[in-house]
Length: 371
Picture (cartoon, rainbow, N blue to C red):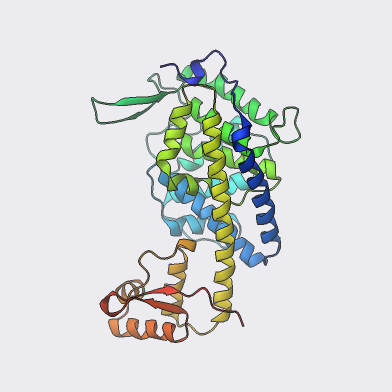
């Protein structure tokens, strides 16, 4: 099989925008709506939405690669990066690195892409990893292959250019990225398309020994942010991770040719899905603020801790709801105290009971009306 980079027209990607025009219009409409929503929020709620989106991106971009980070450490690191708190000691170095990447991508979105920037990002995401040459292109002589299957029965899905080609390929990629940015001579105008191409182009080169997917998604976010003129408020990785098989299927289906319409349809659709989730997150942040304003001074320390833990899960809710057993585990209290606390929350309508008897569990009632 001849891969895209082995074709004589590499990297002259071909595509038909007709199939994504409706999604591009949807993207533009949603971008304007999200921006308007944020402008109408208090700084506290706005910061809350931004933090939650950055946490989701840091966690999900790692989960796509099979790494599971401490949410607490990621949140602490992001808050520290935003200057909102000291954050304390972060035990998970990978979480700290992922958070550092999210903050840096956001802070430097308008700056040109450079080799040093990519090396710096690589060092961040490889923090805590062993046996990886960080902050440099791969140099090993073995083929860089994407494979699946058991040992001895492997299937090669894609093979990237050899390591000795990487420096020149990346020089050309960086030049392309910067020359297609807004207000440049080759301005692509449609940032979702540029974002999709940038990701595919970078992943096809696969320049690092490890971490290519995470950096490729960061590059896609940078492209979107440059097109918007401000840091994009969405989590591409959260949308990708929800249908991870489609992501890899889309990449592999396209990497045998430089005709990439099918990839654009997938990736632009994923961007729009991420926007939808961002709108839901903003609404959720607003609901949380109203909820705590409504019940200010009415929760004891145990109740506050449990509710905060439940709401950390985002708009999707706390899996399985809260039970007396879970309450006891989180607060380290007795069954009698847990039952009493839960009943108090139901009485003041902060919690909604679901089910009955031993199967009773509770959800936070975010539909309360503010005073």
